[in-house]
Image (cartoon, rainbow, N blue to C red; front, side, top):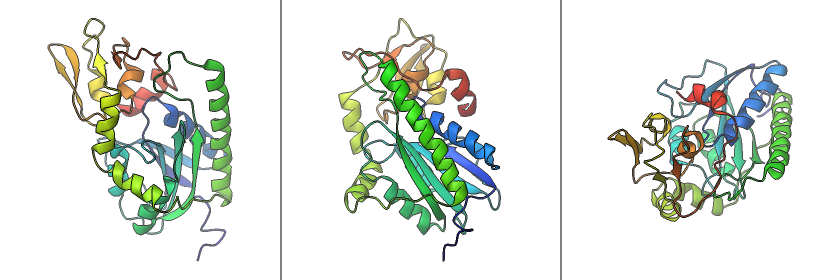
Length: 269
């Protein structure tokens, strides 16, 4: 039986996050700051870290992730599928999207509940589009980001008060996309549509993209970055390349990233 007390957020929170160009990092950082103001101790954990995910006893778990293919990336699904047993600890989900989610929070809730977690709530926020922008619509983006950050702060308050809810998803549709996202098919199709190419004249050979790629899909060859064939199109390499050397050939666009490199990169290394 869920009571008012058991529906509230624990005093300690470990928020595991995945972010490509930074939108998800932006909102989870806002959520963490607001939770701290509300008396919670929050630790951010980057999904893909070499450190084991071991939240302290009694701590709640947060999942912060982007919507991709009406679900989320393989990197994130592997993390969710490998979560330790919940043993009744609370869990919540915060996601960012550029368009539609198709109820993608439902399958994640199902997995968490099956592992013994106590679902506290989910929130999906619309953030600026970060793919194929011929020009960056700065004014529109600022409005979207401001609204999303307000949503993150409101979600933090709802979690601490025990008023948050978690959508069950769209029957069949959300389950279908969750299963599809576990395969390589959608990511291969997307990568064929938007293949990435490294401009050898610009590439510094610094290896930052290789270190940041969550799928280990980038190598260095003769001092230049080389992108492999199992890209999940998270755009992290595009967003944070210091030389702006990675792009989709034939589809020129301005590079987008949410936070500055100084804000996000220290947590990912």
